[in-house]
Length: 347
Image (cartoon, rainbow, N blue to C red; front, side, top):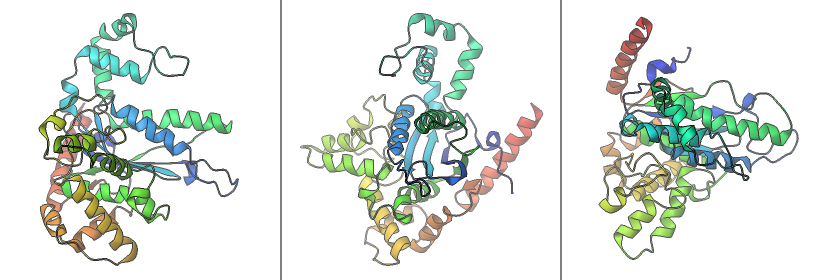
C-alpha cells in the first residue's frame, strides 16, 4: 500500500503531532560501527542531537522526543501554527537567516543578519508568506536536519552521493495515548536494540536528556527551582516539557528562545512518565517485573489497560501506518484527509 501524500495528512492550520523516521541509505550504519570496514561513526550522533537543538529554536515545530540509532533517526514533533502566527515579519526573516545565513563567522557559526539582508526578505510579501509556511513544515524541518548531516558525513568520508534514504516516514499521532505510546517506543529504542540496558544509559535519546536535568534539579532549594531545572535545564530545555499541567507557573511562563513554546505534551508528570517507561521496558524486554500501584491511574487516563498499552507500544515496531490513535480519532482523521485531498485536487 503506497504511503499517503504528506499534503493530505499535514494541515498547516492545525496543531498536529507526528512520528518521523529517517534511515541511512541501504540501512548502513553511518552513525555506528560499520561491520565491513570496522570504522566507528558513533560521533556523528552528536551532530544530529546538536542540529535538533538548533532547529528547535528556529522552527514552529516542537520536539517531544528523539532517538539516534546507528542507522536511523526517530523524532516526535508537534507543529505549532498558533505560535508561528504570533511571529511578526521581522522575526520570520531573522529566523530564516539563522537557518540559511548569508554570512558566517570564522568558526562557521551564522552571523547576525544585517539590515540589508533583512530588507531583501521584508520587501516581498510573497517571500514572507513562503518562509512562514516553511517554518511550520515538517518536510522543511527534516530537510534542514538531514542535509547538513549528509554533507558533513560525505565530506568526512571523502565521498559523494546519498547519505539518507530518499524520503523520510511520517506517521500522524492523533491523541494522547498515541503520543505516549510513540514516545515510549522511541525512548526505549536503544534498549530494544541491545545498545543500552536502562533509559538513563541510553545515549542520544530525549529521555536521557530529561533524566540528567532532573538529576541536577532535585537538590534545588525550592519547588519552583526544581521545576525550572527540569523544564529549562541545559540538556533538555529545548525539548517540550512532559507535563501538560504546569506545576510551577513562573517556570511554565518563562520566556525561552530554545523552543517554540513551553507547552507540555502528556497528561502526567516527568516522574510518572519515567515510571511508565521503566515498567514498559521491563514487560517488553524480559516479560518480568510487576506493575507499581500508581500505574493504573496513568493508563486509565489514557483509556488503556496494561495489556492494551503493551500491545499498542509493540505496534510501533511494525510497518508504518498513516495514522495512530483510537478508532474514533482515526475515523475522524481519515475523513479530514479525504476532504483535504479533494480540496487539493480542486486547486
